[in-house]
Length: 419
Ligand SMILES: Cc1ncc(COP(=O)(O)O)c(C=O)c1O
Image (cartoon, rainbow, N blue to C red):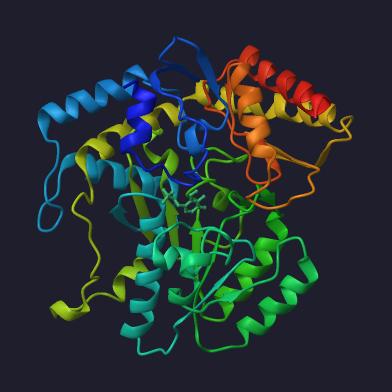
């Protein structure tokens, strides 16, 4: 059997119809923004492999950090034990978020969200307040575990599980500002709201929906004034994807918790972190065991992930990486101007290193046939992309070259014209 045949025989891939599905491409190597398949053909990773990769594939400094740490300490139970990389990483993350004082580690974006949701509920319980309802933006996506699904929009992603999800207040879409603000005022008048969870200014899975700092700031200020905890889900937006390192840096209201994952290790190791304020932490200051925070994963605080995250952060804060992000943002802006002349591209939007547009399609939503047209078209031209329904976007690793980006732009124009 070929590798593809074995893959088909043994593996169950996510978000993929089984029957008549095209074979999965076997990737054997990565270097910079390129991925290489079995035949040696290369693909520009224009979506940073589901938004995780920052500095390129198989980055020598990240693989060296991983090798060094694995020879030193690969893992240790994180209850009653700690280790230098976990401490150093927490110190550095907190330095980036002046409003936060504690870091809780987990494994991925969904678990970083689960942790924040559970912390919120227990925080109110400990304070004797009956606040159990979560509020989320319309079209939200916060992950695939049950809590994260519950605070996400009910959609094709959740429909098989809807009856098991807990009730939340789902706000109108960020595109209906007036309705959203009115609904939010009604929410703020209630006394039973535990927390408001939001993807700051860019809702990735909703189709790279972008909304303004001003609107979000108004919502956050109102929520905070009414005792509602704020959970910033920066799983996608964090680590330089938008104009600043984190979108929260652009807002006037500091959240109570921040969820981080994806880019935290530069795309090398699965990892998550939930940052919390000292006020959150203080609400758990009891000696009795039943008031501790009952959440922990076997791999919590994994030293390999922490060690890689430390090096990834160093690379991220290097002026050279900053210059690369500026270059991407500048070229994206020029590309936006070119896209405006393409009648097939609508709702063109851009923030930092992300540019997105919609393609007119009769069938809207995640099931849009656009994906089946676009993925092979780009792959034949050496590019990996993956539309979100009728939305297409470019979200590249920061190491991408001008030449590679230009190839992705040119391919996009020819794809639109060939439609
Ligand atoms: C904003 C946001 N939160 C949470 C998640 C879930 O992250 P993970 O896939 O690592 O569980 C995602 C994933 O796309 C996301 O975009």
